[in-house]
Length: 72
Image (tube, rainbow, N blue to C red; front, side):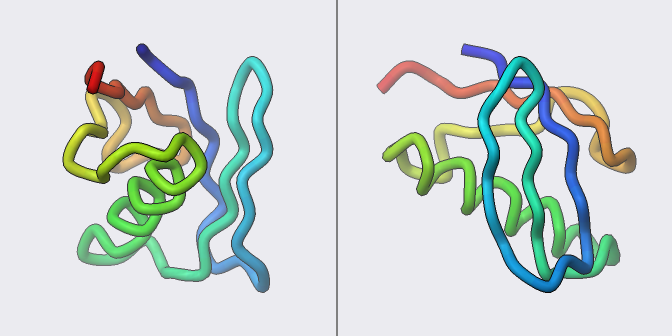
């Protein structure tokens, strides 16, 4: 499964909003991959899958990303 995501780093509150394009707010700054790691953790939590099953396939340095979730 592939999910398009728009990330909002340095947010006051963390949350996930599902839709055609998921909106994900993370507290971490977009430095040294911290925001990307937290994004993967939040999406994994939302879907109920291990974070090792999720990877960023496009947009690692952008706010707009494409994630791939492996079938469990």
